[in-house]
Image (tube, rainbow, N blue to C red; front, side, top):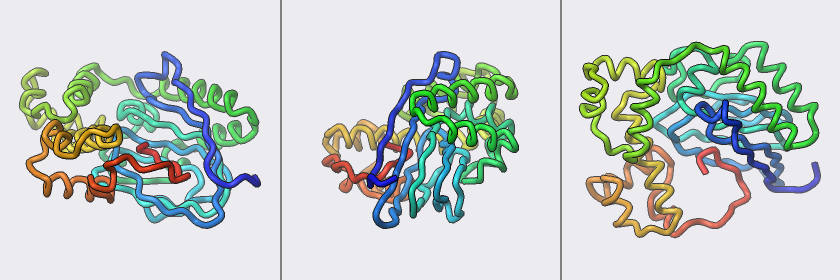
Length: 266
């Protein structure tokens, strides 16, 4: 791997995988010096099916890894050439793929073997043996479909509630969600902990932050973003950006140029 920098090819998940995976990306990266970055919290879970030089994520040195949703940024450090497939899971994709309550994975980054057992070795080996990136993405799609289909079934209530939260940009009230479902607040929180890993109010914070980030990157004025996303004031917005993204709104707007480093929240 002689070329320095980042190269990637993205694929739209198949129709069967789309409720569970929002994005599939084959990538290769190699830099002349170690690259450290802060990965922002996002309303989903990231699975890295990589091979090559291990990287640091969340304070641990791993090659292939994943985890759950979180309410803080994660520091990663790439120190050598690596490649693989990056999978962006919905909360429900992660819940079915890992087969465990998502509250156990909140703010966690773990080796893929801890999450998926021997199956993880199979998929990484097969991806590494597939030279074509398009074929690699198709293989990841097929194997993830099979694994998720075999996972625990989920009812329609939480996906419906999650979709409403996403549509509102995180501004829909928790009491409104509970009332629409005919659930108590306590039951709604318990279900969120199981299938999403965050309580509804915290999940709404992460969604709101993600929307604000996208608006700022699109060139929307900072004051307009603050008002549209429902931040109390500039100080509130700054606090949220520091906690969830290790950045400030002023560092995002205007949109930064390409830095050559991948980010799982981009």
